[in-house]
Image (tube, rainbow, N blue to C red; front, side, top):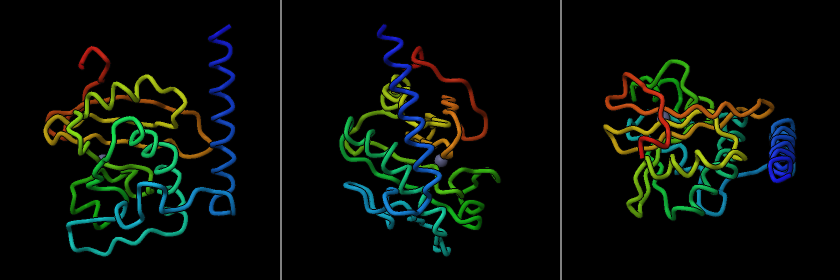
Length: 177
Ligand SMILES: [Zn+2]
């Protein structure tokens, strides 16, 4: 019975998220700033390069802040986002993958200002099936957590990986905590 209830709740959340995606930037869709995240913070770059999202990319940033970053912040306290949206030029300068979700405004690299490890935050996300996660990467070489939102309208992929060098990636599980 409990599993049935959980499954029903998950379907409802997926449905609501799909609706949000279909609405795009229509009234009622999330906007920035949210309670704890601003557009400035999610478009910051140390590269000095132009880094201005389109309205569609901004809508993704707002969805990610609302459905992924705020729940994570509610659990672990203040987070510092070191890289959110990246224009193609900023992404190249950062050495990002040519298909990086950062360029869609669907990914953020962050760390806990309260000193929680990336693995601790990944472990919590692992136990949250209702969050629209596509990919989580525990970056052992930098201490950052890469969080990536599933595009609206798609079922949640929820792939958990870790890396020690930013080049090769392994599957990550709770056994790594
Ligand atoms: Zn990243």
